[in-house]
Length: 545
Image (cartoon, rainbow, N blue to C red; front, side, top):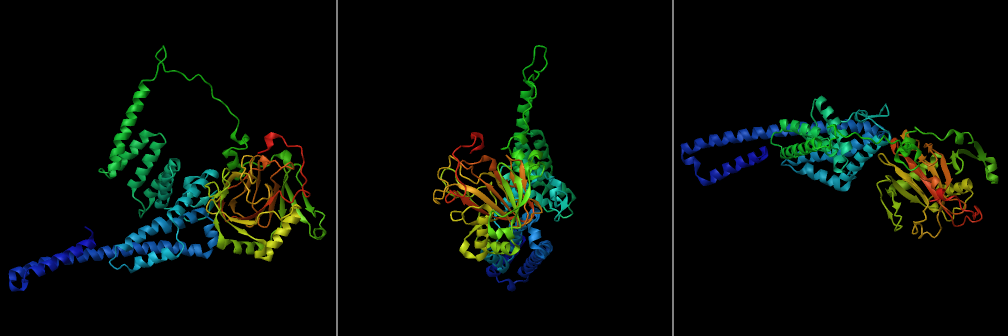
């Protein structure tokens, strides 16, 4: 029975006793009231102590929240640009806030919990899905940029200190979310870090037994039964009656016994020695040589691979006017990033005022970015594209119309059949894995509702600088474009024959630190017949998709 329940119980006993007898008619009966009073005093003392402990705990929460809130509000964009800060903010308003509600809900006065419930219903509050997404984003950054777990926990990203350190509870929650996703590799990493931090914390933020339980099982799932058993035994030293641990101990011991028997029953050679592996080590080509490998994509994101020197030697920068009289006085500054296929960077083609307007118009209508199902042609969300987007029409603001006309001048292509301007903001660890902008041969339903043909070209505006990460990479070309506010990338997705060019496969690398804003215009085939005439000779099959 809780301390609060004990108080009510004592009061009820007292009231029942009063109703059952006329106590004032006998001194002997009145003596029992002293025992009743002693019980009430004891219960009230415990109640007051519990209330004081509860208030002390709530004050600790206020202190933690207030300090972080003051840091965050001093520069919100910079604070949230750090994925570690973003994760801990979501955790504070989900897991941690749930604990606060639990403490408050034990109060007989329910006004406070009712107020919180009202706020949660009428204000933005993160969900468990948000917490899981933030945790997955951090593990994605950890893998892509090869970040050390301990450094991340210290608030460091590639050696740069961005935030306060994670607590043992923060690390535990990262591990727990990985466990819920069936990701036992990251469960182990973060539970190990949680245990290290647990041992050094003055005020414990998580139970050691909980860490050991998750850690043992995640290690078992990765094949190390002996270590899993050792950790389970340590857990049982803390809580000898832990039912799951007791069951796991028996199971692990059985597994080890089977492994030992298999080892003893290995087939022996004629001389009694164990068989020797005769097949030599196979040396395959480096994964960096495979243009469709994850390793190459991530190496480009880290900046470890640069455009081949033989390609760089032929690249130029120039002014371009496209025969446009106006551009004779204000030509575009164009940088060649790759040749065959041609990949261009246009500098200073979106002003700060235009960027501010685009962001202002887009943000209220942001929705989770979608991809097109290759079979049905329907739009759907996907885990390989993490961002929010909105679409802007030319008639919404004169500046949107000006941007569209500028794209026409940049590309020499008509905008009459182009899609609306898409505005994208990437979230915590936001990324878009390698993909094609055009519809491939088998994607027969793609863009059917538009009636404007395939996506012939892409223009991608960078509307913010990004502190770390966030590059646009082309794995086949081994080339990376790094965000620079006000610039735009341009490339053709299709050959002149109309076939898709698989060399244009590209990806948006995860944002490590900073906020990445982009906008893009997808230009379609229809209306380009005389602006980019079709060539009948098809390109080599190995270049088409």
